[in-house]
Length: 284
Image 1 (tube, helix red, strand yellow):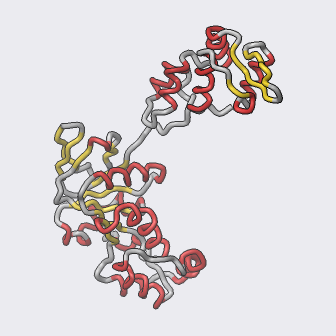
Image 2 (cartoon, rainbow, N blue to C red):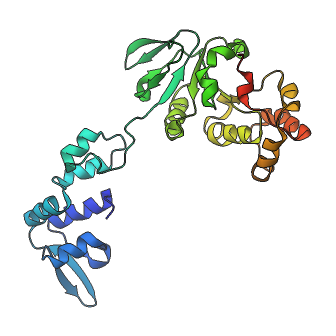
Image 3 (cartoon, rainbow, N blue to C red):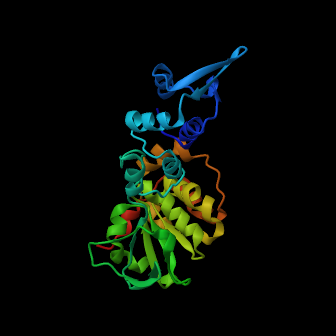
């Protein structure tokens, strides 16, 4: 059975002497406990309920059969999104008891030194070329308010961000964050929502790029976010790829646009029936 806080709560109630209706005790665990005499049935007319034959016996049975040694602690663990693997071992003896992302956070990069505060300590973000910084404890990570956060959609652009600095002179100090790995993206959104800094999304100049900005960022950040539209976007798109446009049109051709500032870019894409990959801006 899937181990959930609701399941553990039922076991705790049974261990504490409560009777629960049979309809609420479905599944292999409860069937096994009935067969082994751990749960005893009581009839109430056409209805039936179960209670533990002995609370301590039930706790010992759950520990030996299901490797759950502390029901109350396990309930707390299951209710905690940020539970550590050490806590899982303490409660259940198994660090894999729950599926949890061990690494939470996101990657940051910068071609110029950016001062930040992490857990009350000042750090300088200026990675050596070819390396990045992974911010795990992002709940305690802050940057100066005048720093603009630029989200980079594709990995190669994030890797070679120093070769694209000519694009971002208009923003002054910038800190770059990566959309990938994508299972970390919710952490990035939570952090962006928690700070007042402006967010600029740098992605492909195509229909999918606009959709990513609209659905993953603007929806959550509103007008403190904007889509990066290069000055030469029309020239780039006119020399772009029609295959990308044709492939994306069925899915994104009729998407609703919330941020009207992107309409000039969208109109240009439809005018030329082309898209342009952001990797083309890497100044090799």
